[in-house]
Image 1 (cartoon, helix red, strand yellow):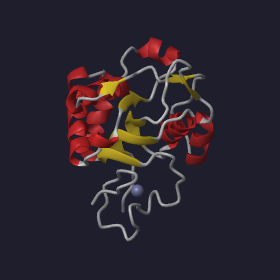
Image 2 (tube, helix red, strand yellow; image 1 turned 90 degrees about the vertical axis):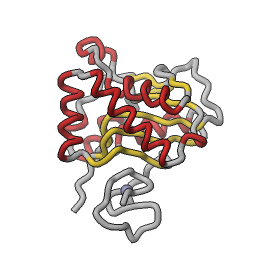
Image 3 (tube, rainbow, N blue to C red; image 1 turned 45 degrees about the vertical axis):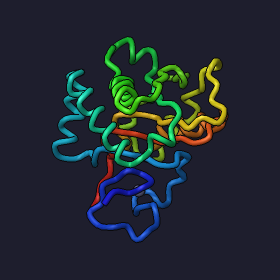
Image 4 (cartoon, protein in one colour; image 1 turned 30 degrees about the horizontal axis):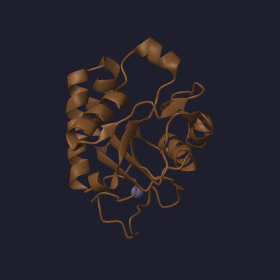
Length: 198
Ligand SMILES: [Zn+2]
């Protein structure tokens, strides 16, 4: 079973409608998240390999798998535009490889939708979310992003792509910014959902 709202793979059907035990208390601004699977086992190994080794063919393969999930979930008709979680220019400069951007570009080609990598700007550097506890993650990303002043989002339904969603703090904060700039809805697509399912 997959949680409709947060994209976590569940061992059993959730008794909650559209939500699961992991996300029912979360105040998500996005409507729905889609993932290939939980951040666990083989998928976890592949994501680590993708990020650490900057493995572009693997990134494209994972992007195509995510595109299949998005097609299966019948989300394509509800989306106008695809974008990706941005990286601060300094980290970008140091690393070069942008997993989220490459995944988003792959998904956009596969589902025949436009990808705009420049909608969201990272206005300050954030610490890596993986190193922080849940409450610190929220603070870490607060006001870290803004919408590019030339972007016109009025009424658009946006699919926001990232590599991994754990607490959801980053995609949630970006969703808040997109919605406050006129977007009608935000959906999230990630390779893996960092969820601990018992
Ligand atoms: Zn959930």
